[in-house]
Length: 207
Image (tube, rainbow, N blue to C red; front, top):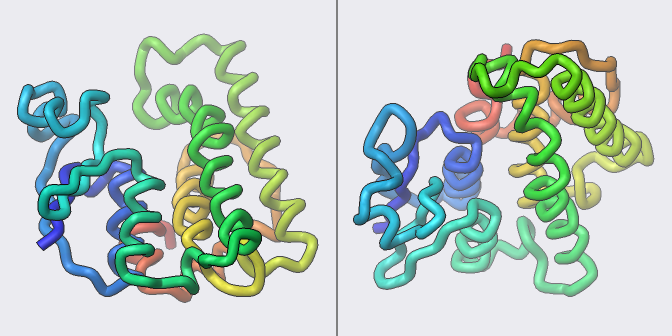
C-alpha cells in the first residue's frame, strides 16, 4: 500500500489526500510535521533532505514535492481526464499547477504566518500590507481567467489544476484579512463544493 508521510492539516498533504480520493486510491498516512514527529529526524531527512511534508513511498520509490506526487499518482492510475497526455492540454493543467507552487504560494506565506499562525517574526505592518495586496492581486488573476467563461482552471472539465488551485482558494477565504469580492471565484467555489474530495480535504470546515 502507498504510504504518505505528513500531517493532515498541511495544505500540501491535503493536495495528495484529495487527489487520492479522486482516484479512489487507498494509502496509509503517518503524522509528521509540527506537533508530531519532527521532519528533522535522520529517518525523515533520509527520505526528503528538505525536511518538508509530504513524502510519498510507493514500494522502492520515494517522492517529495506535493504537485509532483499528485502528477505521479494520476499518471500511475492512468487518469488522463485529470492530467491529459496530449502536450497542449497537459501544459494547460501544469501551467496553473506550477504557478500555484511558485507565484501564489510565495504571495500568501507572510500573510498566513502573520494572521493565522500569529508568528512574531511576521508582524511588520508595512510588509504585511504589501503581502496582502499582492495575494489579492494574484487571486484577481484567477478571477479574470474564470471570467472568460472557464468552468475550471484548464477548461470545461475538472482537472488536477483544480486540486491545487482549489486548496489555495480555500486558504485565501479562510485567512482573516480584507479581500475583494470576486464573483467568479465564488461561483468556482460552489462548483468545487460539489466534489466530495473538496468537502473532505479542501473545504476544511468552510460552510
